[in-house]
Image (cartoon, rainbow, N blue to C red; front, top):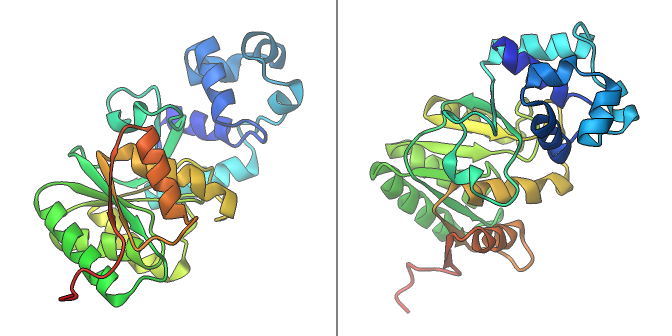
Length: 260
């Protein structure tokens, strides 16, 4: 990790400081180094950050910070911020509420992306169709984006890996693999694309994190395909985000291999 990335990690590990707070601080001070050099009183006056939050900023030699920095160096994690004009995805930057920063394992492809999500308890035909579609998309130099979940998401990544690149967006920390049975799949994705998360390291896969994950999935893509989604599912929430973001939405509601 670069010194700037280490500074961002330190800032992001501040308890109570979320996306909006990070953006306010950058608007007020212009750089992460200037933010860290500023006093708690300056945080309050210029960015409206409460003193209790400023006081939670980890010290430069905080044990958790040092441990996480070492882990990220070992894993090869990089941090991309909203203010990084070269590496931050343009499509994601254009949405209403883009992440302030992204933790990334692997390399984010530059080509256009298409998202594919769906049921965790998918039918065999749904998984088969998803694999075939995603292999075809990836073969045409289109990155397949999904959420590393069981069922359709896993099939989407697996199909894309057959012929090209894929990106998995997590609803937990970049150092947490969920579901755990997808650990090998995650490693394969890192080799042919990237895994990313907006959540601080160590964040567990809580239910409340997945709507935020879903807006990133649709935000990265030109369009979204929903396969066998249940009513009130996270996949349909992704479709809602996609429509709000001006993306096209497609659906496979049921079996397509049947002759009738």
